[in-house]
Amino acid sequence: MKDLKIKYIKDAMGNEEAVMIPIQEWRKIEAQLNEILHYSALKSGLKDAFTELNDLIKGKIKPENAKDFLNEC
Image 1: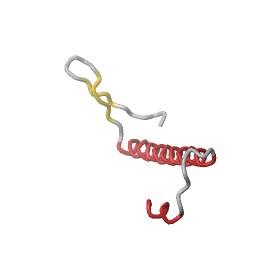
Image 2: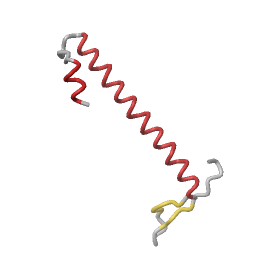
Image 3: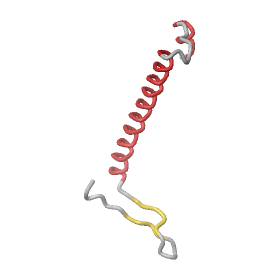
């Protein structure tokens, strides 16, 4: 990506408004972004699960039975 051919779109005053990049580069960026978003969602879910487990251990919340848990999904 170091040789990325970026074209800047400017308004009549010369202010940059947008950029254009080759579609192949955009697809690479989009794939990387999707991986990051997927990783972030997994990390967030794991963090929530560990927080809930910690609350269960400390008695802050009551455990639910397996049937109720499975019916949530």
